[in-house]
Length: 299
Image (cartoon, rainbow, N blue to C red; front, side, top):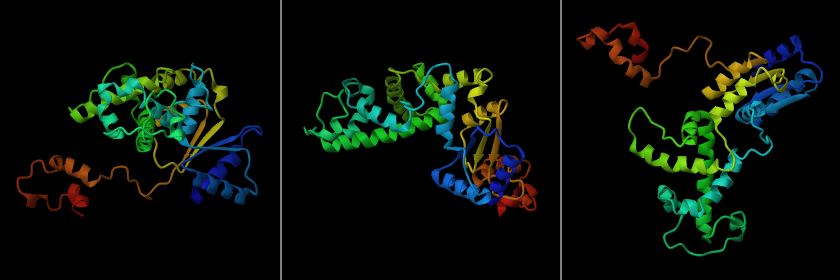
């Protein structure tokens, strides 16, 4: 990390930004932000005019800023925190309770005896519900809502094509038949359509709109973006950042786990999948001894 920090300092010294421009550094977590901020201060004597942000949070905000449609970046109804309470309310509506597609969901959080209990604290944020649910039911509904909010947030980043299909009321078709997936898809797609009734939100259309406006809205982009110590990133974001690099400087400070090139290394699972290709033409297993392709796999 100290070597990456030295590179970051050198780039900022060789190519300083204008005095009123903030340096934008994307970090993995708050701990990395604190370490980086203190390290920069120790090296330079002061650390200021730096904008730290988390990857998904910053990139979604940038996409919404560039898109044609106006969004309130301070109150995103499709953030994990907002989705949790919105799903919590929807699960208790007549529209969901009476829909057979949600039978599995309703059976999970609703108790069989349906005990009447007024939980003032939780029901106070649930004006759309016509039922009084027990404290245990409300707790299970809240826990389920939190899990679903996290799931949908992952879909928005790693499965935007699924969200796009659901947005058009079309089912997602997998390469292999999966009855369990089809069953889950029915109520998850219905839930997403309910969430987008009040405000349209399609990640594919949103991203395409942002990309179309890059040339005309260059003034909204930072002068330089630095991604420091990011472990992993969704393909959607890598593609978006690649397009951003045509209009602003983008730097990745990434730890390499090995001094040598390791991109061609295979896991055991991958090696087994290629085993038939490597052993083609060998009738006897003894003929494989000394085969350089299998040397590493044998270890």
